[in-house]
Length: 272
Image 1 (cartoon, rainbow, N blue to C red):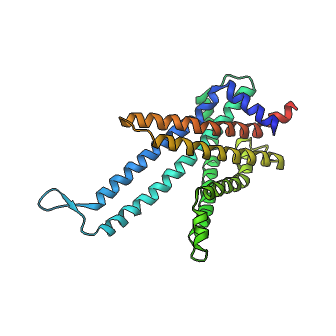
Image 2 (image 1 turned 30 degrees about the vertical axis):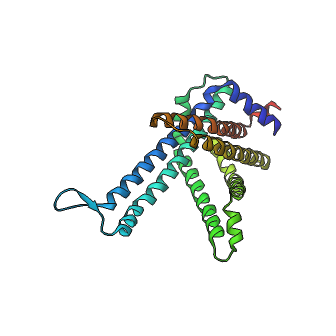
Image 3 (image 1 turned 180 degrees about the horizontal axis):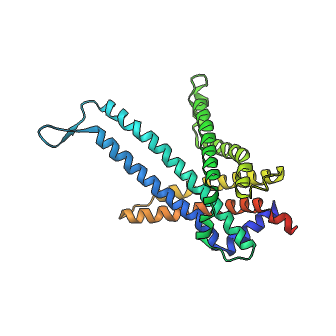
């Protein structure tokens, strides 16, 4: 594991181009999040008002029905937004692997070529994204039932909804996700002729994924608290800070993507 860590950190430090796919994905996530919030606001406003025969808009006579109508559209849009975010990050993972491959083979890294490299395997990228969403939905549903079930005590609900418990739950979910999906992730980055995944590769990938999730949660919480404490004079300032925070937190995922790429390429074993 130490050799993998050293190699991944060396590539991260010496080749800034490896940051590009993940950082672009992070910025696209911000854009998708802003668009989704704007769509929710417009839909709620649309269904909460109705046109008057005398001209102008008036409040809806049945606000509960209006909210229900809006939610019938908002929920599918929210699911689509989350799926697009997952898909974009899977494309970033594949692009990062292609860049790492170019660097290891002493080629000039080209971001456009690396991103286009996922096109021949877009079905595998799509299927992996669907698997990820399905597993997250199952784990999320299980946690919701566990923390809200009337069969459990109120004390258990309080503990389950605390920040410390949320941190533990997130790490357990990330570890489970990594254990289930790491073979598929490494297989996605390898050529179809070399689908074999060793147990050691799987364990290393899981350790890196859990460590990345832990660091991202801590860093995201610190940056989020700092961001809420700042008073912005314009929306552009808030947007700039959000982008900066995204770059900082996604740096950990750049390292994770490089490590998974190295596991897929198996360059460390060749050097050993």
